[in-house]
Length: 239
Image 1 (spheres, rainbow, N blue to C red):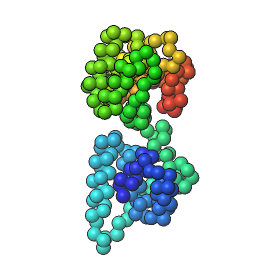
Image 2: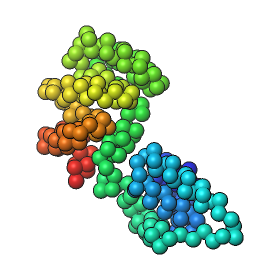
Image 3: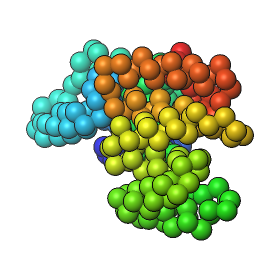
Image 4: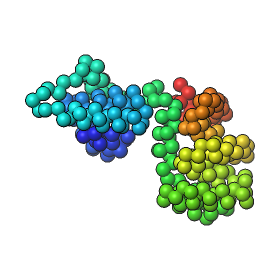
């Protein structure tokens, strides 16, 4: 049951499965309680702690003897009722909206949604970049990083290579290097579309040093004011 709930909130269910889930939520008290547990822990903890706590609490709940009523507290009842209500109103994503999630969570979600695989913008270096991307999409981040770094040594102004190098570093958890690549990309003025400042904000939110949050906020506002790539997301994040 937990997997089905997780898939629903990660938007991994097909349309028929999503419709069936929402119908079941309105009629199945056990599912409503499970969703309540999920939402409470989702809202209260970080990703790793949330998953662990959710699994432990729900496993303990499931192990209660059949003779012992599986009651839920008034708080959980309200959350379960709210979950049904919001989904019934087409607002099931309220609990995962920018107003609830932190910018750090939003940045992580963006990375997972947009940087799982990459494609290349066709130009004179398309063949070389495609080799880098092939390695990246296979999960060979170190190999991809070595290849794109070699490209940048020959052509430091290659914007597409700079972007990919930053993304590779971000996925490897080398936030200092990612920030440097994205900053170098962001200062290039001749590009028609430049995500450098937005991506640097993401990298700073993920690194999380004392000044990073403030600098990320400044970058997001630059993206909005300059109508730069990433503006649509930035507007949501600074609300």
